[in-house]
Image (cartoon, rainbow, N blue to C red; front, side, top):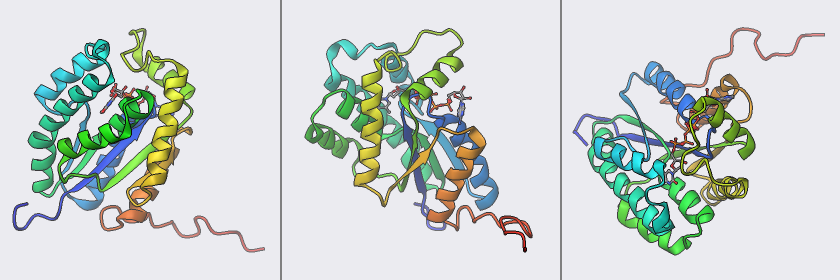
Length: 233
Ligand code: T5A
């Protein structure tokens, strides 16, 4: 970290397919820029750097699928290592707020809980890939998988489903349970956000969660005079 930079802040967004992460990251980034005046970097996994984006394209085409979940997890890890070293750590060292669309919890949920890799193996891989880096806050966007898949399909405009969207409903139900279990196991780091309502309502819930966590980054919204108060009889 440069001597006068504030400590960087690392926030990850997680959840099933089509949960609304990209939509909400853009909104939170704008709110944080305005409220804190700090540099806000938005990025995603797999991807975020040129080399990791190349791996992303291969992963979403299903190139690693025939090799099994362990090989697939290694390929996600390879993309993550490049992303951490070349984008995330430098941004945090500059004092930026980094908002990342998916991170290591996705490996736990997709390749671990839903893909069948043993938790010990996932934990070892996480240790060597992340080193001492951990998200400061993880927002888990939670909604029934049918709703998320319908959103992802409607946005796809006739494009075929990618490697993971094409998995059956049971797979997506296991994912949802896995993300909820991660939140229950690490309540200090994780907040579950109901992602079922419209984008404005979800945004309000996310702002509330971030404000409660770090009011210095995003102050609580001051209610207008009379707003939220009951009427006198
Ligand atoms: N993966 C990833 C692993 O298996 N292991 C790993 O370690 C990692 C890092 C990435 C895939 O890789 C897997 C998981 C994924 O399958 P992706 O395309 O990035 O692929 O997949 P998603 O992260 O699921 O991205 P999506 O774009 O599909 O979903 P988002 O970002 O959650 O949703 P968003 O914001 O794009 O919204 C989807 C549609 O819904 C609308 C939007 O306008 C959009 O059309 N929408 C809403 N509609 C109604 N109400 C709301 N509240 C809405 N919010 C958004």
